Length: 363
Image (cartoon, rainbow, N blue to C red; front, top):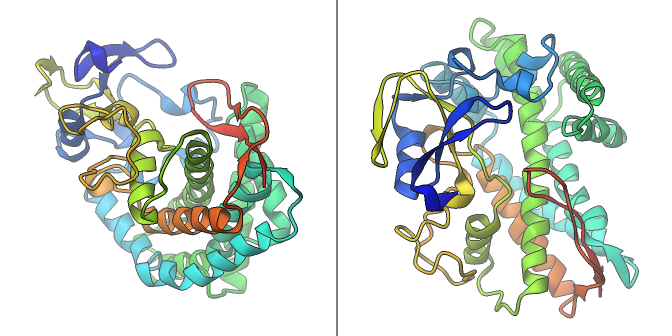
C-alpha cells in the first residue's frame, strides 16, 4: 500500500472511493490539522455504521466515541472523562494488575493457550474492575462484543442491542448504588453537569471504554508475546520493548475515518473537500523517511515516534493503562516461564483486522 505513495486513492469496504494515507508525516498532518474532521455528523459519502452492519436504533451508542467528535464537542467530552479516568487511578491499579497476572499463571498445565488462559482474561478483569462491571457478567458481554465482529448481520444486530441494553442497565444500577469505580464517576459527572453530558453520550463513552479497554490490549499482549516466542530477541527494557511492539505490530492498524472540510494538498496530491481519508497506522509506522530500519523489530529502539495510540487531540485516553498492563503481563509471564516456547501453530482471525485467536505454548 505504501508503495503507491504516502497518499493514494483506494476504496472503502462498501466500494466508495477513499484516500489512503500511509506516510508518517502525512498521517500526523491528518491527525492534527483541523481541516480534517472525524465528526460522525459530517461523514459525507460513507455511512460507517451501515458498512459495519449496525442497526440504526443502537448505532449512535457504538459510533459516538471520543474519536468521533471535533472540538469544541470533543474538548468538552474528553475533559469530563479525564476528570475520572486519571493517571492516579491507573497508577493505583498497578499492584492489582500484577496480582491478577500472577494468579492467572498459578497452576497452569505444561501446555496451554496463552490467549485463552492469560492474554484475554487479564485485560478483561482489569477493565471490568476499573469500570465497575460485575465479574459474573463478563462472559455475557464478551459474547455480545464478539458478535459485533461476526459476518452475520443478525448476530451483529443482536450483539449491538445486547451490549447497549446491558450498559444502559448498568448505568442505572450505578446511579442507584454508586461505588468507587470509573462508571460511577462518569455517572456523577453526568448528574452534576446534566446539561453537558447526556445519557446517550454516557452510554456511548462507557461502551467505548469497555470495548477498547480489552480488545486492543489483548491484541497488544498476545502479539507481543508471539513476537518474543517466534524470534531470537533480546527482551531489553520492558518499557522500550512495548513501544517497539506498538510500532511493529500494534493492534490499532487504522485510524477513525476523517473527512476533508476543504481542499487539502497532502503528499503531492490535492484531496477535494468532502472526501473520506483513512490513515493507515500500520504503514505509517514503517515509513523509512521517519524510522531507521523500519522492517526490523528492534526492542532497543529509542527514537520511536510511532502512532500506535494515535496522535494529537484524539491520542488514546487509555494509553497509560495499556502500557502498564502489557509491561506487567510480559514481564510476569517470561519471569515465571523463561523457557516458554510455542506448542503449535498460532491461529489468526480471518478478514482485514489482524488479531491472534490462539497461541499454544509449552512451559
